[in-house]
Length: 405
Length: 228
Ligand SMILES: Nc1ncnc2c1ncn2[C@@H]1O[C@H](COP(=O)(O)OP(=O)(O)OP(=O)(O)O)[C@@H](O)[C@H]1O
Ligand SMILES: [Mg+2]
Image (cartoon, rainbow over all chains, first blue to last red; front, side, top):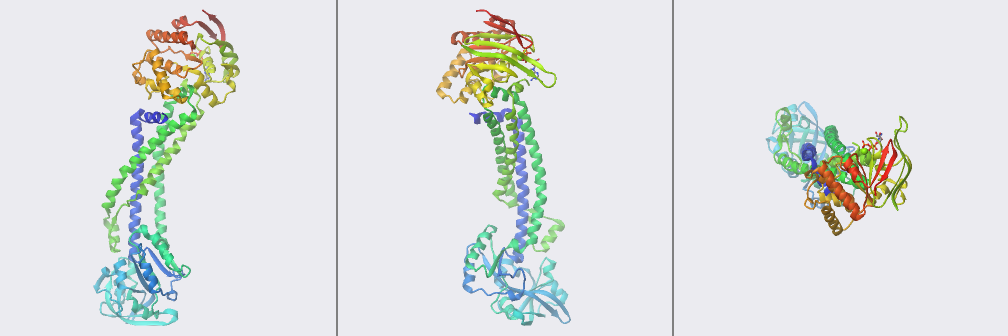
């Protein structure tokens, strides 16, 4: 009965009801769309950065990330590696042995990141072979290196030239070697382009005097939703007092910070958006309450309890809010789906920069139901809070006054 | 037995600034089955008196007994429940809930009282028959004339079987034919069911039909005439 009354009251002023529903709908739609683009852009950015080198997770000896020195290299028995590889969420393990060294040609010397990699594993995650611009990719165990183009330029070296590498090896041994430059690799990032040198893993272990040791294992995880469960499963396999299992956000704190700064900027936009919507809805509620004061007076006069009357009006507003929020979700779904399937494509300078880094300059919307639901919930909660106004009004209403106009 | 009894009822508006004595010591007894008109010039306190008797407003001073109970002692919710159970109201206009049909309006208070569906249906039918609107059960108030709306309001007031009915200028917005019609219905219910009616009016034709006429002047009773 009260529900029936509420429902009919909603449709009493159809135009106003539709305007209110539409404004709620657009708030949800706009909020969801913005949030989806935002999430999508960051998701894309993170997966780019992560797949570039870092991986969604890494395993090190405990303390390595704090102090990245070759002395913190570790050996992981083959059965442990097999156990990790057999975890469903883990698409592959990418072992590395890396440290800084000096590279030189005749009379030029530079610092470089000298990384030993498993050529096949590396290719499966970071597509290193695709970056080879000249010469050819590494083969297991050979005595050869890949050098980043920028570094090769500085050293004035090319394919088939010889590169001399000097470094400090494991536990202070001297590391020195001469290697054939087998290929040049191109990185969009000028940073990487000036410092990367790759060796096959076995060659690097020999060079550093770190036989069978690794400094890190990067983890290939194909679905972002699997990261936490995958890393947790590794925690079951490994002794976590001896190893650290780190997620990408711990590996890339700067990126995480940039993202939260960006979201903070968005909150201001949301705040403005929701304030406008809130004022609109409040206007409707105010008008509705004012118009019906006489009627409220009659209802209380003939014996309707204030609580019952308030709940009718509360229900009306809540129904309105729900209708708007639901329609908002319904409207957002195809829109966001479309931009998920047909990502926005950048052009101009920004696109060039992204492309130089080897990233596709696209901007796919994240399609995540929770985004719509959260946006709808926010608008709904705002509506529910505003619905307190008529409730307060009815609590204090004096029927005699209300009916005197 | 008095269904309504007031003693020294006073109502002062703006007691702090320039006080307005809307009622100034009203003693009135109304018995079961009366058909009483409250008359008097505009501003004499008719509406104020009806509101206080009906428990819609509280007196500044004095006592109001309804069915022997001192209603000034009741809390807000008790007073609302009291009105629901014992008093039928017919206001001057816009009595009905616009989104409900005539039938639903009449049954509304019975729903608040949680009466059974059979009882409600039967009572609505009986009352709508008795106010001559059995063909308008499903009409919305906006589809009814002013006179028809007031008849539905009378049916609604009667639905919960109240002790008495208060009507503040129930015919003020009606033409003479509708006025006549409404009064016929009220008089018949008064006679046949011994329902007590107390109504205020300015209309001489309505005053002529009353069996007791109480005249208020400046918030005091100046005449009290019984015509039995
Ligand atoms: N809420 C109020 N605040 C101040 N004064 C009021 C209020 N309500 C009524 N009054 C005053 O009380 C007096 C009595 O008013 P009341 O409405 O009872 O008169 P009435 O006899 O019903 O008049 P009418 O025939 O015009 O309906 C009037 O002087 C009125 O101005
Ligand atoms: Mg009046």
